[in-house]
Length: 301
Length: 90
Image (cartoon, rainbow over all chains, first blue to last red; front, side):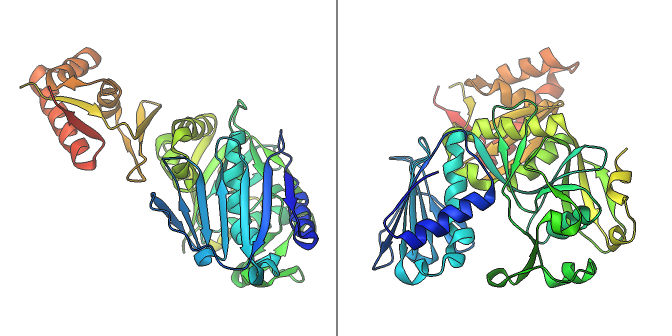
């Protein structure tokens, strides 16, 4: 990322955050960061995709993507063709990078990456003891993080518990992981019987890197198994899922394509290739997964 | 007047193991269609009459014309309701 910012403290915070992610883009994208006295107060009458705390305005006439965070405390415009972004933060927010790096800038960067053919998907990535790549997609309460931590503790390679990027142009489709701690809620932390970890105070979670749990970090996975996850009360089950249904689910966990309609067909084809190359399953996670050492890998022949 | 039908320009379609996945960008909706629906939606990339669609089904499947017509009519109605297909002036 080619970062331009007059404020040394912000530049350092962003550079460190980007370096920690260990994602290396094939070409540098421009990211301009500035601090403003007032929140952005403009209007954008284009279609809007509403996400928690962030509104995304997109479409004609210019096709640029506008992201408005917390009513204008953060504002970004991303040129989806070049991947260049201009970000403005109000001073009060800028002073607390933890408040906007992951909650806001991550989505800006994910939008920038679309210019590289990288598609953000809410999914965990892992490699099982037999060397098979897994992609586990689902919402924020689907058990991805707890499962990722559990698998790491059992020696699996784990890339991410939530932030993955599908690579257009690789065959088979490969997935890159944004490196950050696996973020556990209290219930997952307790179920795993863990101690220690880094307090992720803003998120109310505790973080561990895979190697802190006995696993290893893997930057890139080629999924042979795609699982759409959800937590339930019964035993853990893994049922084959028709690839077309897996595609529909994967679309719902990679919604950023909506704001980039010019590339929507490519995204659809990318997700379709992923579902075609992998065996797809509906994964229902039960508490027995904590008792059975290799339950997941045993469920998949 | 002959009514023609066509896929909405903001609908995207992909085929996978005989099924289709339909993505409607305006509506931000996606759903799957079976092989018959896939055949019809693939044909509807160009403006088609109901007779064209019936012919497409007969050409693809072992089906009698009345059944093909009923299938095409039902599917078209569902697609029109969801905005996946639009009617065109003759």
